[in-house]
Amino acid sequence: MYRLLAPAKINLFLQIVGNCLDGSGYHELVMVMQAVSLMDRIELVPRRDRQIKVHCTNPAVPCDQRNLAYKAAALLQQHFPDHDGVEIFIEKRIPMGAGLAGGSTNGAAVLVGLDLLWQLGLTQAELQTFAAQLGADVPFCLQGGTALALGRGEQLTPLVDLQGLTVVLGKYRSLSVATPWAYQTYRQEFATTYAQTPSEQEKARQEGGSATLLQAIQQRDITQLAASLRNDLEKVVLPRYPLVAELKEQFLAAGAIASMMSGSGPTVFALASSADEGYSIMQRVRRALPDPDLDLWVCECCPHGIQLETP
Ligand code: ATP
Image 1: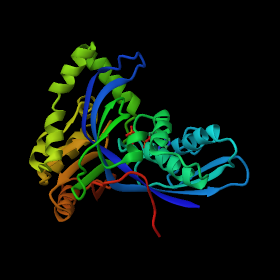
Image 2: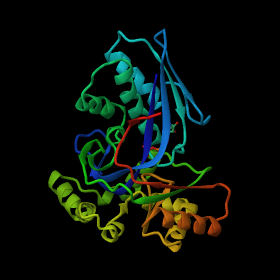
Image 3: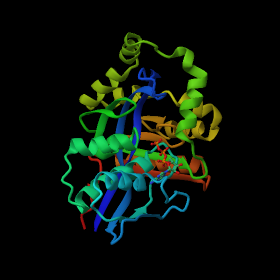
Image 4: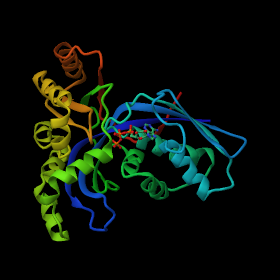
């Protein structure tokens, strides 16, 4: 049996450059991703037959073939057919449909766990290849820390990690945003602004502001980092979800160094100068928005991806 910890991610930067020029229908992105210490726990128990069974503490999460943990196990079983099945228990702490890559990090955890359980001896590069087949965010979830992600999000460059930086997360429990909807809506509204050719895309990347953020991360300059956050999907999500826009405003009013929606939302994150300051911000936001539907967490940037849980 193996137990793993699977961190959520936030996007410090998400620029939509244009359509992927390979005709895949995906968007060409520039992202800076950050793993955070809000984590799901995954337990893998071997079965004596070939079945894959998923159980999750959140009843809203599908436990059949749609589950990314299931898909990860099925993918490995297809490549290594000599192995029996597995029972996968997911203790969900990461909210679903939140822009925090909860499904992707579960898929990444199952790849790491089954490599150990089935003694496959996969290299990091082989694990990354399987991860890319499961979804654009899965390679980052496997690696964790702080990373620049290009292409659909699968071309990763690790960055100096921001370990210790405090992040406050806020999400309305009853709100969720479907990632495909957010990208499709963005395309409908902004496709005319897309960079079309490889050279136009390169220019858009260079002018998009990621270089300033990368420099801030390199120098651990939190003020510059705060000024360089970007998320293009805010343009379609915030106008339709006024609660999300209000939450961002309240984080800033409560003293956050910066605040931004993560991924396709609706989670909003805020950066704080210390854990104490993070808890103060959380309390001020709780007082300003006393809605019991609003969940808030104080966590920190985490330097790793999927990890074995130590007893
Ligand atoms: P991302 O940030 O990668 O877009 P997200 O945080 O917005 O992801 P998820 O929590 O991953 O969203 O859920 C998105 C969809 O994935 C849900 O509709 C859910 O049905 C499905 N899903 C599949 N497997 C899982 C899983 N293990 N945990 C949560 N959701 C899952």
